[in-house]
Image (tube, rainbow over all chains, first blue to last red; front, side, top):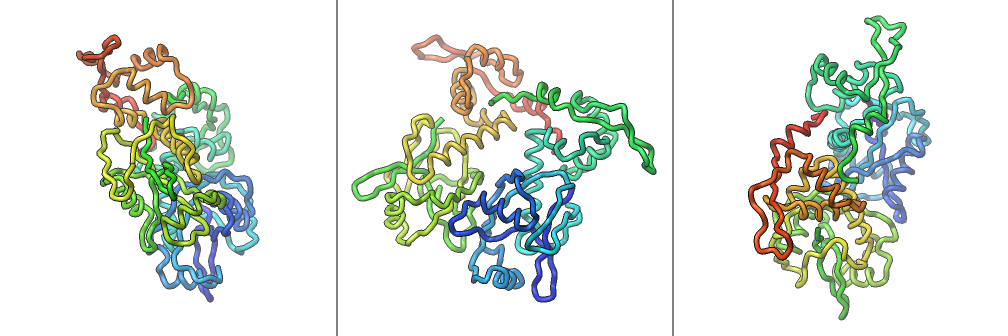
Length: 214
Length: 214
């Protein structure tokens, strides 16, 4: 699992951060989120879900962050409140920033120390994604290729989970789910033992997981 | 199901609204939500869940709302962005406002037209509560008395649901849930036919509803 980060420049120093910007005075936050995502990455029409407002009064009190805001936004900013949005997508989205030279995917477990409270925002976004998947497990299959190996599912699952999961137990559990269907295909051109491909059967999943309240 | 509303005064006119106020310049939104709830209702130590930021640029453009803000907050306010919090509790909480003379519970299906976008906030909060209960049905039992009748459960459930639910089908479905346990007690002093009391067995529920990801 990867996260999209951008590079900010302050004097000669580079630092990566979450993509984000100010909203206009006549703009709704939902519209601002779409606009900023498009400006920074070239991505349009992605379903963005507002997940939390970050408003700790001390979140932008670091000297570097204050200097960067002054240069970037040409305004004196007393306090900055961030409304964070979250989106999940397959990683093959083309990135085409009109604003930053460097916008890239970073493995979620290798994110360094970021400015503001951006590390906190990322860790809270993981909690949010976990809740989504708890309430609808089928979301996980939107992030996988159409045919996937159990190892791919395991890697994504463990990236999202808080705990270590034993791969043998995982295999056992997964094989009891009738909506994860083995295919007659195996991996080709791999150095390890070729694994079987599986597909997700949305119809079977839906039948087993009807909601009590609709 | 009821919602807590307060009465605002503008000249001689009274109008009810959602409880809310401005945050201080050095205050986090979570702390402001707790403070405002306490000032307006006397309630402390309630778990408040931030659920959405409302930022439509036109949400406070009504003349009455502009006049009321001017009187209430003694500031000229160009634009007001609301971070909405949500809490569920049993209805027997004592209300003791230091700020408003009238703070009271209103049946959710009898809420009149409210100022700002408060009706929209309420309808989105219902969608949010529905999601909570979809992902954890046991939440519904936190709102019921320890022993409850199926009619009480049905009434709460239908207040939360979007659709009409047939009470016979509801009875049938509920009786298939082994965590809803019939008691040896029936209602007393009621004009209609006395109904049986039930209790919620959290242990049985938990056993049947272990999450896949933790």
